[in-house]
Image 1 (tube, rainbow, N blue to C red):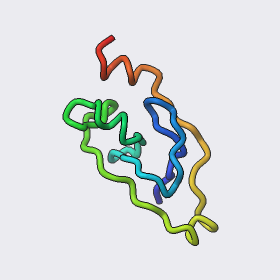
Image 2 (image 1 turned 90 degrees about the vertical axis):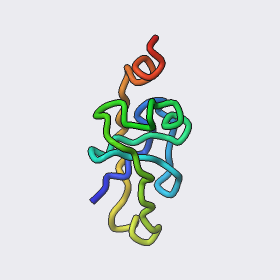
Image 3 (image 1 turned 180 degrees about the horizontal axis):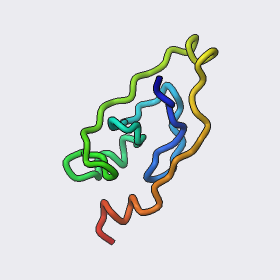
Length: 83
């Protein structure tokens, strides 16, 4: 089951379980604004393709809540901008 992480791993913006987000096969989670800056729209961690994260229906969130653990990749912005 997907963790449904609560934030963008690059800019740390909050992402609601029902909001648009992108994930790779390792479930690195990204907001749409950051994804637009990734070369070839690929995951900056693994290079894999990014897909829209499925939305877990609200009723299913009751028994299967989204994760509250924040994951942040401190060097993400440096890697995508080269600075």
